[in-house]
Amino acid sequence: PARLQAAAALAGRFTAAWDSWSWRQPPAAWLATLQPMAAASLEPVLSQAAGTRGVLAQRAAARQTATATVTARAIRDLTPGSVTVTVTVAQVITSSSGTSQSSAAYAVTLTPADGGWLVWDIEPAAAGNT
Image (cartoon, rainbow, N blue to C red):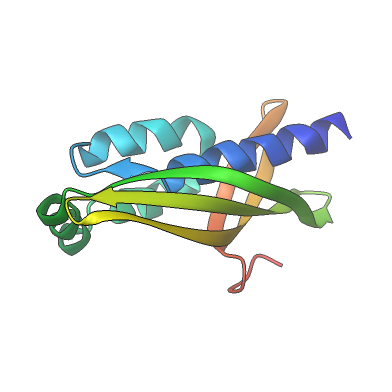
C-alpha cells in the first residue's frame, strides 16, 4: 500500500511535468525536470520528444505555455516487476491568442529502482501499458 501510493504519486508528478511546458523553456530544462523520475531506457524517448522542431516552432510562434494538474490516479495493472497507473490531467494552454483547456489520460508504467520507483513508459491511456 505505501509503496503503491509512492508509485502513484510519482506517476502523477511525472505526468504533470510531462504535460507542462513553455515556449521560453529550453528543451534541456524540460528534460532536466523529467530525467530524475525516469528510467534510463526512457531517456531517448524523452530527448526525442523534447527536441521536436516543428512542435517547438509552433509553441514559440504562438507563445504557448501549458500547465498540467493531476485530477485523478488509479492503479491499472500490477505485476511483480512493475505497476501501471492511469493518470488524468487537466491542461491549461495560454498563448498569444488566448487560453484553452483540455484533459488527457496517460498510462504510466513504473519499475522498482533503489527502494523506490522510476517511470519506464508513458503512453496515452487508450493506447496501451496494460
